[in-house]
Length: 103
Image (tube, rainbow, N blue to C red):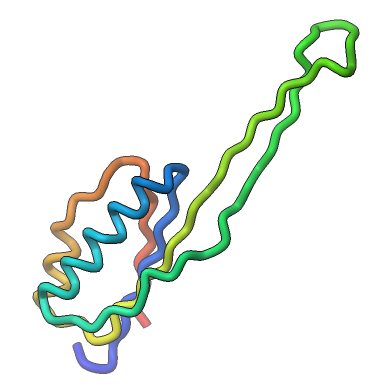
């Protein structure tokens, strides 16, 4: 698999969960002899929602909720066959979204 690159993008709402998953991926890739670039923290997306508390009047009474989406990027520059097999067998937590692209 020479001249290949694997790009892994991770998304999660919990920053501890995404950091743990990132370390698992990096450790697995380094253990199998691949060269790793990253993890690169990408900008965190913040979505805020404002909801009226009162059902009828009192426009001043509101609650605000926020969802933060944390993102990380990992490039595996020179993956071996063992690297790909180990990454496929890796079991990550349920709250982490993983996108893998070859390039």
